[in-house]
Length: 206
Length: 206
DNA sequence: GGGTGTGAAATATTTCACAGCG
DNA sequence: CGCTGTGAAATATTTCACACCC
Image (tube, rainbow over all chains, first blue to last red; front, side, top):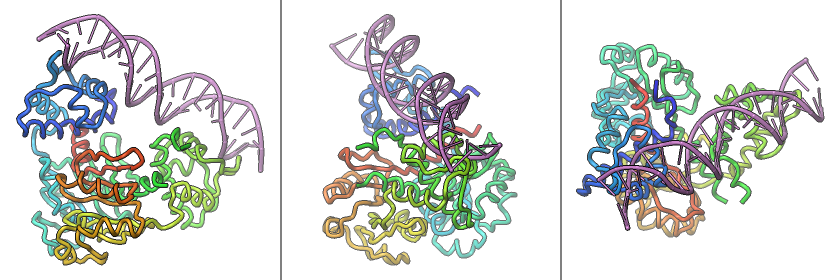
């Protein structure tokens, strides 16, 4: 794939730029310079320009970037032009919080279903996403062509569940378990390890 | 500070190594080679050795690293030798989930208090950390010498609250709001943007 | 004048490869 | 002999600086 020589970090930043552009758009701004957008995103102007250049030429010299067009282009580049359905596995403490959390929805992801080994307990937590028993997972994924999954289950079950996800065609896993998941090369895992983040901070305080 | 020439990423990895070492210790393993530990951590052996070398010499040639000693050393390096008190601000959806989440406690952080503009509502969510009104925040931070804070409040209040944290002596902020916080150079902010992580994944699925 | 696009330089990080020690 | 510690090489990423265009 031609994505191979684009730094992973540039793709992360693309998401950040997209956010900033949305804010600008809401404020009725039509054009933005690399300097202004870079400041909003917390990067250097040259880096912003370089990042955007990986994907094409969008700016007008002397003027800047058209906010609307750039936002749309980034959205498409990120594969966000259509709503991506997501499932969540493990509606325990963290999982059920994420279900109530509106952040994903706000960014245009639809959490279509959750799965848990004790779905009744999970449902009781005031969630309005359907919670199904664990056993229905594989069939649901395949039937609905789900490509993205959020994994919030205890670490000892994480790898086994990841295997099931992969087998059912999932290509991206947002993993909250503090474990290194082993998946085929064509599956992307994104680890969010909350305790690790806190630990990292602790190094920087005197 | 002499920390300046150590790659930030190396520090992240230190936390990962520490986790792996804990597992090894539980299993009664006394010595581990860079190859074995690297595999467990998902990095290359040479990288592991280089990372450890930033902090000193711990290994025995021909043998490997003493698990116990290395774990202790990393713990100290990360500034984790003593229990760090942490406060959480914003006991809403995500915040209260994090309070019930046992991950921080498991890694040895103690969330000593939470703050919210509506503490009664938050308390009702089955949390066993004391939840105080927002207004008590500054005094509590100063009085207890709190250095670490978890910030889970709506994006529009994030910067203002961050300012209060900084003013009260907080040096590390784990920020869940999708915004770039502006803080003095001696304060470290670690951003966890859940929607961003999902968005990033979405780029990698075809 | 102002601001993008981009090769080239500077920096940062990873990986290699091997000397040296237990 | 096995495995660490580490300079040196290779790669990756960021930043510079300037040609070029509106």
